[in-house]
Image (cartoon, rainbow, N blue to C red; front, side, top):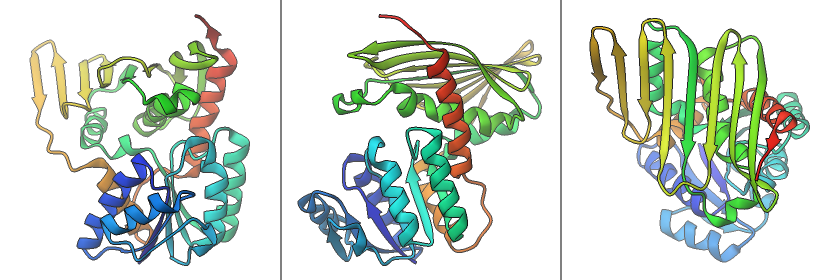
Length: 302
């Protein structure tokens, strides 16, 4: 299957590297890199062996497209990609509001385009293991912490769209709720854009606390599950799952495959018609609905 990449920035480069590894497994053929900066696209083409480079989206002729542009350009780029390909992967959050997501979803479904959104944390094996243990330890509360200093160019985007969106989606993935409601949120802005955010929500009858921070110079990716049977703690940075019960502490061994490569492999398999669970534009819509509530209810503090 021929595949094109739109976006040759930092994250686009990571995706190109992972796609190259999939090409070495004979799963894809690297066709085209598109970026508004043709020099940058050409450099990525040479580094990973794409056949072509271009600054024009209309150059795309491949069956599948990966969209990895900046947050503010994801929507329009994905909208065009859906016109051009049969299978489209778009990085999270896919758009900046629910109206844009609804338009993407309507067009993708009307054209029969297979779509996937880059909520990469779903593909972390630590999360996968945690999800299995929830059957034995049903939660009454889950607490997410996603903290790390963001690059300065990301400060123009709310930390909710960038970091918190991952955990809002993870809560859907872990709990599969029928009803969600944001109860409370606090936003801490820098030059008008939230760089810290805390939100409390209900996913059915489970209390969920989200904390996202784009300022801390240490990377934290943690999920705490509070259950009647004990405490489950998933550390996505360390790749460790710990279960604390009245009888002691159990450390669950986790052997991780790179989540980026895993999610792109699932995308390729889905493009080939195979049935794999993956986040789609419908999941992105559910996540953005929650984030819009976070911003509507948000108390801003300085």
